[in-house]
Length: 401
Image 1 (cartoon, rainbow, N blue to C red):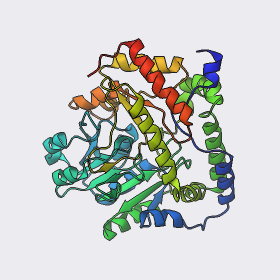
Image 2: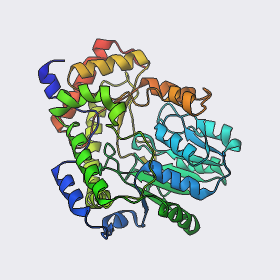
Image 3: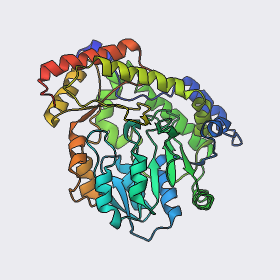
């Protein structure tokens, strides 16, 4: 890659945590009494707060008081921290296949495995809502947990995701839409279950002031590596090699903790007008949809009755060869991408007892490529990405569908 391309390399993810976020974190490390009024106004409910999405899922699962080792349905095509939270709660993940087109939980496969399940997790992948009517119908009496880590402000038949099931959780970790450093919100319709969730969360660790200050500084430093020019010069070449050792993407490890006041303050400050940023990202997505050569790729879309937040833009190729060739082509032209969950089947097989019965999910893991469309990009960046994809399709000889 030429030096000019390295300097201008477009990062794959958006870590929106700059000086203003750092200043707010420092100010609120000394303020533990702030009430998140904006969050309550946006959602119309007061959530139960934890440090992370995985901690929230753990709290929900423990509160359901399921028998030890009970099976919890979960899409194979989702982040493995979900599997880990299930195991940490003393339960067993049972993997459910995905639809190829959306790519959310397959209700057909869910129905086939329903009799073995004590609960199920519906993940709104890439911000695109699951078919919750079908999910709830198949679930019958078992609890349904919505994983809304990627779907803040997405809607299903006019109702926000997170309010369509037994309980739900959102994530505000950097790299997610809001990028508050860390933090998660749990929502629950039933007062009795909410009380149990609160009781579990009350046992979680609290953050000390030094921990909050160090976390804010570390998050600021990591975020700097996800911005040009540092990303191409340092973040990508060094971070790719050291990610597993230094945990640059903050996906490894499991800590059950309450939310830090530094994270809560930033979430509350940003959420009130955050839909304007989502609208900008939607515009970026539609620029790609209107520019990329039709008929060659599987492209995302809003299904009938659904309104996605366009958290991620997923290109679906015919083969791993085509996907990998496109990823290489885009990188050589200054655009980084993500082969999302590329090794998820292998990880689930090695660590969580997956038996190979989710062929669609395995196909998705080897053929989906996420391209950047985040709201901090400029229109010229999006146009460049779209035209580079079209040029890449010709170069790699994509076969179409």
